[in-house]
Image (cartoon, rainbow, N blue to C red; front, side, top):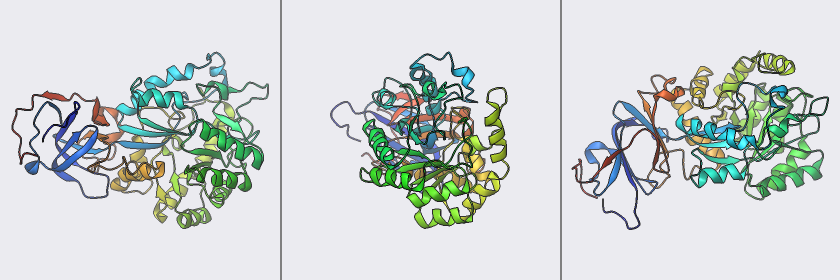
Length: 432
């Protein structure tokens, strides 16, 4: 392999089985060669090119090499385990920027190299990660969610305290949106602030104090305006939708993905299949029992009611063939445990390979970055993880960050020691 000018960085990953994220069966004892942050070659060890010059090596023996995972629903600035307004009273302005630093690092160390933050992060954090100031996954941001007065996203309590202002580093995580004029204006404002996805609140939610998941959020007309304006800029729309009616409303408006979808019914499933929309079921949050010590009483009651039938509803959607992308709602559930979602998807009817694809290829497609990440193919960004053992035999393995032996993002090892090499050692295969 002849070095290119300009101080190219070369990394070789050897010895593991490869699951490349395309749906192909695992391939044992494969080698991945990374040059300048991109996958340059992938194939059997016996055919691997000789790599000359200084480079680094990652030993994947006994493990599995997979694409870096994508979590399509996170909230990096939210405190995991509950959002009791009383706990936010003394949080100083902009504290969220600093609180996000360890969360970003833990998420990357868990094997997630790309995320979609659906309200909370802004361009400042995104740029800090992109510029290498802070370690973390590359991020698509919604900036702030669009929701109605008194609905999900309106976190004002009866006395007027707005706990939402403490959840986003720049203040607030939502923009109150009432009527089609405000829907149009706020969509444009979110995109001006760097949103690569627009989030709309189609239903009420668990954590907002003045609504329930069975209340409608934005109406069909408001969401239709959002979808049309966002589409004119090539930006998808994600809908927080928990009740069956809100799911149908969001799909009628033309959203790209339904977030949560806990009470999806047969009509909603049919609409999703007809429109090719994605379901992001956030089972990590859905199946976690509410903690009364960390959560407001109203949130506990709403979540317990939601959990009564969500398992059978999500399983029915999966069985019907609805497109699923992995998302956790981390921030509501603990950060840095994102890949526990894989086992939950399997518990609800997906095959282990299907769950892996939901967290790699399919989630990358939802984010609009499938040409860059989500599969291990020459020319794509060198985002990959090395997991101990075989996750197709035991899908719980990736869910424990201790089993994520190495994480590479853009060809740089963020976890797992890469062994420095002089480039003089012979390797199998012909020189390239």
